[in-house]
Image (cartoon, rainbow, N blue to C red; front, side, top):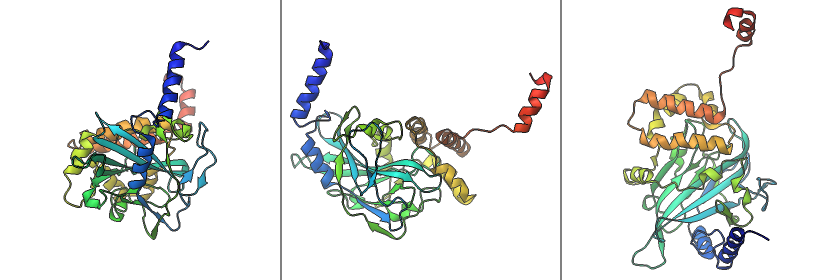
Length: 333
């Protein structure tokens, strides 16, 4: 006989699904899908994109497998704080591979929008802020944001430019070539035709068979949290009218150094193997960047490069000759 606690959990899950809230976040699933459709971004892709389009992955599998490059976008909708005054939406464009510098299988990219309830219109929401991720957790982190009103995206989706091969997301064509380390290109782009829009649910409560959201083969799970911290909102509010603003100003000196020096270093900043644990470690350093923007440039550079090294698993390799010499010298033991 099953323990009573397990039976209660199974009953609660079944009731939530029956009540139309399969991911158990307090929002009706049909309501979530309506919001996803209403604020769906327009993704601008390169006509020569090497991985063609975002992929749809096989439902019901623990790891992302059998990608179909058909332009599927995955969504996540969840309330913030008490009540439903604020709702956050994530749009994930998931790729079978990163085919830019430092190419690797599985590429997780996303944009997010923060909605606020209209006080004079019960049940209606407007977009307040948009957030766009690019090269998260590396020295070339180019996460940026803007007021929805400045993007003409308060009641509909924003336009998102996706860099060729690397798939970083940008809220304007200009920021694509300005905020990273020089490896992003958003040229000769066209709007991707709207494809499937699938709700993945929440961590621990996936929907539509999206159990692969927690796979260790990529860093999707680490991105399923709110992007709109008080620091991020304050940074966006500090922007000039119609400005798309970088959210990690402490990393600007490092990015300028890379861009002004050897362009092959871009692969260090933007490439690498995106494992879940690596992203979680790197994410800590990235979020800390918001709090240390006033520190000395040298400290920011040191922290950023160390974070990127750990993110990519780069370590110093010992000289074989030195190792042999050490073995032969008894005094070194």
